[in-house]
Length: 326
Image (cartoon, rainbow, N blue to C red):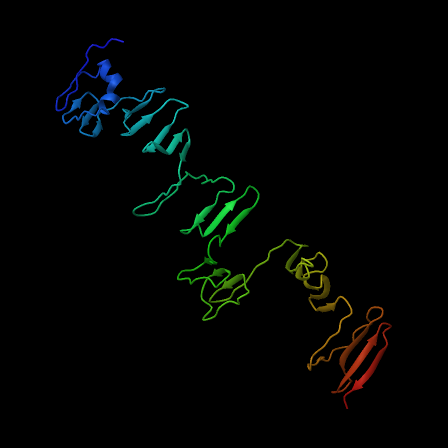
């Protein structure tokens, strides 16, 4: 290839040529990276090199398919780095790749810290998600003390990847540290009190506190207690109509023992009632009707005056008085 001008670059000399000069176009990179010290200026219509500073002038349109670095002439005041389709950028330190950028992807090549010297670091993906791959954890703490990740099937939150920390979920300001070994949901201080050492979940408020179970009609809501012999050795169930209409069903040894519904307290198997020095108190009422087969109903009844009798009605309707006030 023939060139119209072949300039000689000498220390402290000034080299000028029209930007249309093909030699400078083809060899600009070599000229600017030369060991020769250019203390004076190379001036063209769009580029100025002063010492070690490169300044881009008015700019030119980016051309697809070319490798280019410069100021775009589209009025956006942007410095453009352009490579052809399928190519990418590599940013290196001491010839060791640090970042590789290809279409739609920035890939850090080494363990990397992203930090700010002031203010917050904000990720703003324009209304969509910030996505990390399966089994890649989001970790917090200087030693990745707490980690949350998804393994492709389940989501894990390891609060104690390092250390013995607990979790505080605060619904109010000025919250304390969580009670030890617990997940602590806090809305206000209940006073100078600590949760039981075996509690894994603590709910605290300076007013009323509750847990709400919502289930559809004809379904149940359960609190179950299990061990290695039975997952449901004990259970407190509220039944919304699957077996009884709105009532509690109590299970022990994986067997239903008691049903409590409106006006009914019904044991579900032969039961020993031990009052441990207490008593059963009956209030006077009108005589009930006969009960079901193999039952007897005991009740207190007015004797026709002002005294109280203790009576029993059998399954055939027979009434016996077996204690009378005198």
